[in-house]
Image 1 (cartoon, rainbow, N blue to C red):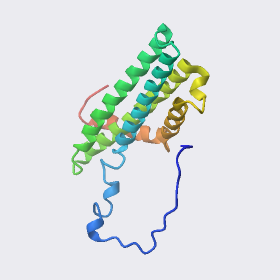
Image 2 (image 1 turned 30 degrees about the vertical axis):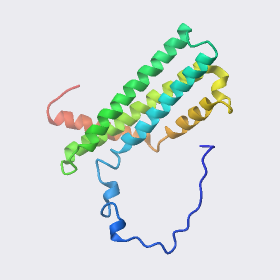
Image 3 (image 1 turned 60 degrees about the horizontal axis):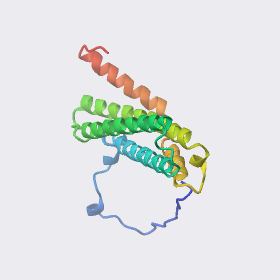
Length: 185
């Protein structure tokens, strides 16, 4: 985020009319779209990982190392991880966005799947980061190389408050839901 800039805005005197509101008070925190909406962040993370894979491939190709079998194995693993993560995010998006907020059990399951998706995407992205760094060596950390910005930003954006607590909540919800209908793992 070194390349970003923040500013200050003074909203003193700004009036918001009812017609300007997007939803009623409390709409922002309505599930499954609040925590369940974490699939959107996960999609951005996958996009960052995909950009990192492409930048890694470009640098390997430019140096004539893309055909090395070790590099091909790293790229193959990175592609498998990003493809799997993208598919999980896509499925999660459908589950969350089609959930009926009046069905609390379905909403809880959708949110839990979103939290699990976020955890899986983080794991995939962390591995892609390691694969890119291993493939590129020191160039991955060269501030003049575009791959460094992608790598740094992705690493930062993956960090989330209390990921273990969110994962525990998701697991408990899904285990309880399966137990209620007599399903086992």
